[in-house]
Image (cartoon, rainbow, N blue to C red; front, side, top):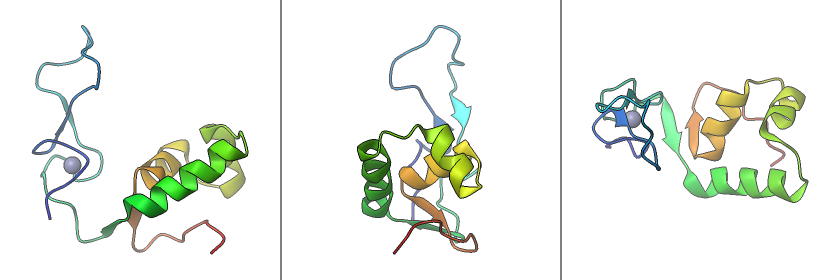
Length: 93
Ligand SMILES: [Zn+2]
């Protein structure tokens, strides 16, 4: 499937930013290919549930990621709905 995170492999800011390259940045999920890698599951509802839970507990992204022993980037990626299949999922299901 097409990568839902980007436009043909490129990322653009929601709000235009003068220091942001006009060509956008390479997508960190698909590495600029524009195709969601096989190694990812895209589960936006699950990601949103994770985020809602964290917001409810008023925990910052960085704090939550430290608790789970993963990087803030990884947690933010999960909250956007991208779950890597070979990665242990740190949610209580
Ligand atoms: Zn992408």
